[in-house]
Length: 162
Image (cartoon, rainbow, N blue to C red; front, top):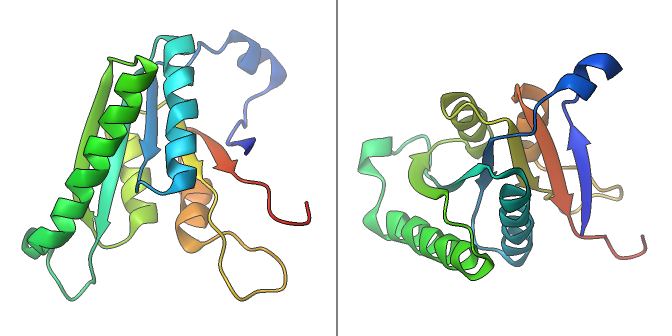
């Protein structure tokens, strides 16, 4: 796994004066890469003595209202939240909050949650569009990197051939 930091647009002097992050946010969908990223985020929460919010998003088509999200889809989000709590417990993180939300677009929902919870640092797993000669980040990751007002750590596995 590799890690890249985005959104550090401060001058050198300002960055030296910056306080360590106290509110961390990570979207989580219970994939292998997400579990690895969550373990890393839990370790960072311990290092910084920070509150960790885990966001389990349930994407629904725009034709379906968010209040009408199918119960089976919400149940999948709840299962992801349970898995996230188990990982945090296994690492020893107690200051954790898990949220399950139905959304129409994950990228914008992550950015809104980062603002809502005043996240200082947002972790996101790198996902790539398939079928392209050159690796291109998927739409969700691109939106988060462009729109998030906080620092974003992009967490991803090395691609074959790297």
